[in-house]
Image (cartoon, rainbow, N blue to C red; front, top):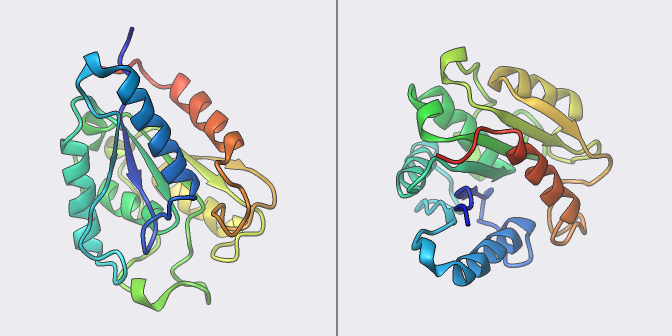
Length: 201
């Protein structure tokens, strides 16, 4: 049996609660780890910044680097909300990103210039252009009625990262409040994205 591709889970501010789809997917991977003990590898790693509630970009960037380095194989980054901005920041500052990760599945980015953006995260900025040599295969999943970012702004962010865009209709911020639950449709989007990547190394 082939190894599952590792995931690095990058939540938003305050971390993702147990009912958030990121947490559900992570638990599913942990259960898979239990079934496939012979792999002796963790299939999902969540970042662990020290500043969940008062997020510091340097701290989050370092947390992504640490989580990626802990993976035995290049992972896929699975980010939500502020985590998307953290991934974008990590990409633009990591010259060997394509050698370290296989792709990014990014969901519901917030707009740092928007009225709803949390004041605690004021240190974060909109994605800066990622040099082509540092870009990775990236899919940005966008909701049409996200209170934290318009779809048009999200497309601008995607362009900066070299990402393709999937619009999923009116799903709010694609979180527990939106009522998406385990977000099985998103899991299918991720599966399709991973199927299009190079085989796990």
